[in-house]
Length: 640
Image 1 (tube, rainbow, N blue to C red):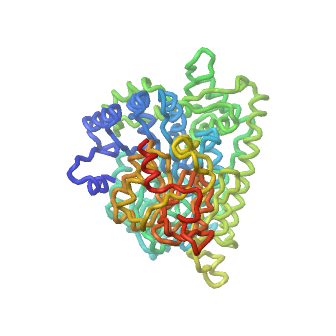
Image 2: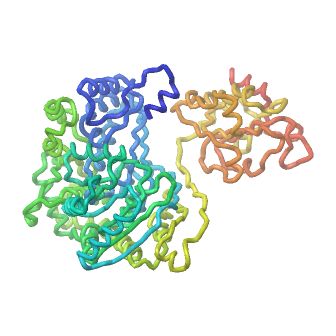
Image 3: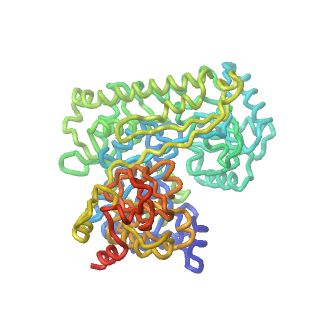
């Protein structure tokens, strides 16, 4: 991004736009000052930085309406519970709520992005970032055509190990060897070292920070041939030339499997996916994935233990700081997944509308920030781990400590989670059986038909056992189908109705020019449409943007800074569904009737008065149309 900004703004100093562990204390202070002063522009950072080091500065910026967007990438991680579990991802929902409450007038917008979102993850996002009516979704899901899939079962431990080693010996590199348990990652690294592999490293949830940084740097600089990892590795690491993904364990969900397979072949070239598993691996995966493991009794025990040890932040005990490391008496000791199960319990309660996640107080962060010298430091990882182990919740069910009420309110959510888990397990077992085409299974995983949450999956498969059984994968690749935003801010037609009383805004408005349209001469009209008359979607020939660079800066003339620019050639194939005030520019004398039939709050058609009337092809539009503005009329109205 820094390089892109340098090219776009040559000669202009570009600020530090990434917050990371290698920054000096002076640079950290400079970024915080820029956030507070509204001059930072954009900042890339981890969720841990948002809920930690940057929190006081972000609150100060929010109080002065200096935040415009909160953009969260890899949003599917709010539902991830394996070794890649990071409580800060879930805590972002509470921080967002706190920052929105701090904004005195105009709230910032939140954008959550992911390459894949399963229906269960969408429901979690609705619960954490909702209410659902305020969360709009736009989706265009296409499956990766690069991976070729291979699956093999071997219940003999030594035989399975030999097969994995054989794959790694002959498969193209770089490779990632995925396992589920942290101990397995360390064991496999020792095995590979003993086999003579020198350019390998491991990465999992317990890998110290300094080792993580060294491994990621060596991986990015092509100094490693392979990485042994749990699901903690891969997010935000875009190495394009990974050729082989090997799973020596069964991922707990098909979604996790596909996410990890997607680390390969990002350069568009072929990649290989090898899954070598045993019955024991299946049992481990089921143990991690199944929410049925947390019974009514254990769920209540977990909640009671967390609440009883929580710091009460109000007089009524409804606002609490929860320690995710709290262990119920029955479990006696903390396991690797205890924090994840506690957070899962809180999110199930949030989905059952028993509580909401809230933000840590910025003041609480001050002592730790001071001890860390202004930010994260590898020397005080334990202190930071303690900080991120706490989250703040606001209860909305007064009877939460009564077991009958707790079980009643959580019951429907547990039933839904149980059904979702069973459906996921069925898909995983079908994948392991190698009897179904992988793209068909993935299409079933990601498709969604809930109102306002429609996802249509464009299938593709580079080859899998089911394909090879019938002679090869089915050729062909369907163009992804996009489902658009269905709810938008209301359109105020007052400016139109006050200045052009004769127009019928329920029909296309024809803004006619005396001669052919060209990019430069009509730009003042387009600018007025955008800045004064509320147009937020502009469909125009691609040549206009090439000939007139001012079209690239039209967003600067829009309150809110966003406008959709559509290519008219693409629109002829599939018109946009966005319910936005729109202008369509025709630079030829032929007007496409299909583009006139789009439903819009207002649709302005810019054309030559000598263009053919689509309803009367032998006559000019200027002679037959009734819902018409001339160029002179429009400019006069724009000035008034």
